[in-house]
Image 1: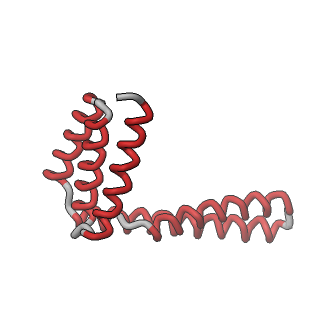
Image 2: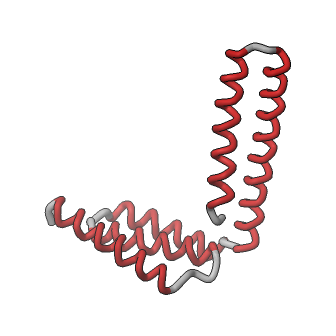
Amino acid sequence: MNIRSSMLLAATLVATSGVALAQNAPAGPCQAKREDISRSIEAAKAQGQKHRVRGLEKALSEVESNCSDARLEADHRKRIERQEQAVAERERDLQQAQADGNAKKVARRQSKLAEEQAKLQQLKSTKY
């Protein structure tokens, strides 16, 4: 199978899996992980990547035996809380720089704050 055929097959698999996901929404985050890994296994098989298939099958086995929706949700909430703390710290740093009146520091601190806020927004917009 040449590279062009492999790429076409992979693109087809991705496109059809997106339609399937839209029709059959997973019951929870663990189910979504299982489905994602299964799709990756199929794509790796189609491309003849035996080592990747073995690794993905091991990952799937781990998810099936150890994944807990409640734990994934709790871990995600903890990541959001930590990021909220990071944003609050950057806000305090910015306020201190503004109080000092150093324009260069203020610009750096605003940039850092914007980065942390973007990370927080991404965490909040993703599910688990």
